[in-house]
Image (cartoon, rainbow, N blue to C red; front, side):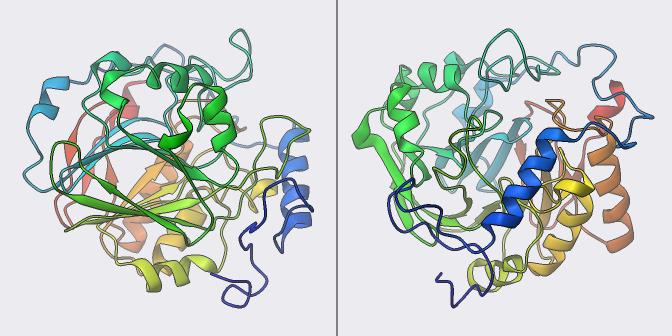
Amino acid sequence: MSSEVWPGRPFPLGATPGEGGTNFAVASEVAEAVDLCVITEAGDGGRSEERVPLRTLGPFRTNARVYERAPASGLRVTWMGHSSILIEIDDLRVLVDPVWDERASAVRWIGPKRFFESPLPLSELPTIDAVLVSHDHYDHLGKQTVRELAQLEAVSKARWVTSVGVGKLLRTFGVREEKIAELDWTQSVTVTGQESDGELTITALPTRHFSGRSLWDRFDTLWSSFVLKGNRHRVYFGADSGMWDGFAEIGRQYGPFDLTMLEVGAYNDLWKSIHMGPDGAAQAFAAMGGSGLMMPIHWGLFDLALHGWRQPIERITELANKAGIRLWSPAPGVPTEVIADEEHRSGWWRQG
């Protein structure tokens, strides 16, 4: 996916991150949005509704015995909150952007705190074939979580798939180098099942976002969305992104998708270059072809913006009703089968 294919849009770093500067076309615009994200303190942003639930949500509890039997449909998803997801696809299991940490922060005593405890203890995870890490932000890559996963028998043979440059962090947190595959945009890796003869192709694709775990390492590593292509199903994990023209091209080249996961939370009009919010997600889904089911992600677990905590899901539900989008939004921790074109709207957030 060269700069010629994606004119005026982000393109792969190519060289080692940090050497020779950041190699993508919209760096200055994204950097400005990042600065606004850091300094924004005003605006209504949904302040009429609480940004944090008035009481601790849940408890939500995953019945780990469900994983002893493969999903009848071939596709089952357990949403752990925000962007942490366990995907069972065509006899393989993929753990995506795992954050079991109490806070999405550099330290344990301050920073955005979870709205609810993780529904599934890491020790109860089934055998994992791949761990997918989209980028290095704290709400997508939990330091303590990775350290624990690296010691688990259930994850011992898993392939860790991530964006260029993020492997250094994973190694620092205890993941063995030979287990890590770092992908540039449009690169793929094939993962073979441990408990089956199934195969899954994982392809990294562009998003309009940024990277860095401090003010001093912005753009040192890549960030990506991913296509998961099994023998029968295709899933798109959108990770974090602002709205951009590339969604249409992704849909044409890599779709159609059975399930399209798009971010809807942690948004503000000043940050739209890096976080598209529910309105952008509806536009992106339509641009990708509007087929299959849309799963809202990146919401419901951390206070990362100025809007009310329910606002992302309520707004995307409103938009879906108007546009005829088939919405798929399970309750946290519930392993839920994905049936072709069959909506699932749990409404769990109304309890908070």
